[in-house]
Length: 224
Ligand code: ADP
Ligand code: ADP
Image (cartoon, rainbow, N blue to C red; front, side, top):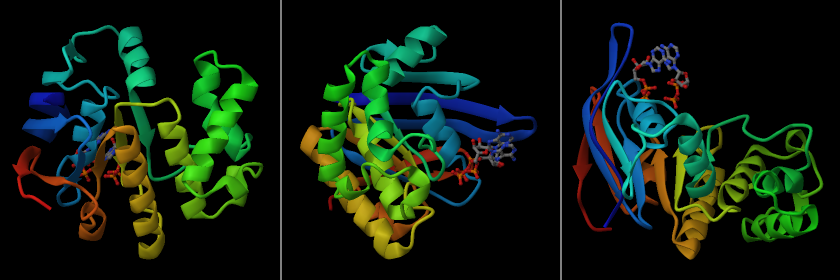
C-alpha cells in the first residue's frame, strides 16, 4: 500500500526546470534511496514529497490527504506529527544540549520535560550516543551529531523520515555506521525512510532506488 504518492510534479526556479513531470511512490516501512547526478532535481523532489516546498503542478498524497491542497497550518501539523527530518548540516539548536535537542519535538507537542528527556535519552542510547547527552552539538563529532539528529527525527514516532544527504558531511566509515543505525532504527519502528544520496555505498542500505534525471524520477525495481 502506498504511504506517499506523488504524480506529475513540475517545479521551476526562474528558467531552471528542477522537476519535469516526476512520479514516485513510497510504501509503508520501506527504505528508498533517491539517486541521480548533481542538479537533477533530487532535493527538490524530496522537499515536495515532504511538504516543505509546493510544486508548481502535480499532487503529493500522504495516505488519503493531498499535501498540495491543504492549508499551511494543516500541512505543518501533518509534518510535525507524521514526518521526521534529517539534513546534512546545522539542524540541531547550538544553545541546547543533545538530550534537550532530541526532547524538543516532544516538548513542542506538550510533553512534560522529564518524560520528554527520558524518551530522548532512550533514543540517544539506541543510536549509541547517550555519552554526548549533556554536551552541546558543537562539542560532538560530525558522526555523533548526525546520530543525535536521527534520534530527534525518530523521537515523535514518525511514519516517514526524510533525509537529504544525511551522510554527506561524514567519512565513509561514519557514513555507513550512521546508515546502519538509521535503517535499523527505522525498521524497528516501522517508519519508511526516503533519502537523497549520490553515493552507491549509502544507497546500498535501501530496499529500492529511484533514479532522478533531468527532473524525472524512474523507479528501479530490484530485490536486495
Ligand atoms: P539535486 O538535489 O539533484 O542536486 P536540486 O533539486 O537541488 O538537484 O536542483 C535541481 C535544479 O534546480 C538545479 O539546477 C538547481 O540549481 C536548481 N535549484 C534548486 N533549488 C533552487 C532554488 N531555490 N533557486 C534556484 N534554483 C534552484
Ligand atoms: P543538495 O546538496 O542537497 O543537492 P544543494 O546544495 O543543491 O543541496 O541546495 C541546498 C539548498 O539551496 C536547497 O534548499 C536548494 O533548494 C537551494 N538551491 C539549490 N540550488 C540553488 C540555486 N541555484 N539558487 C538558489 N538556491 C539553490
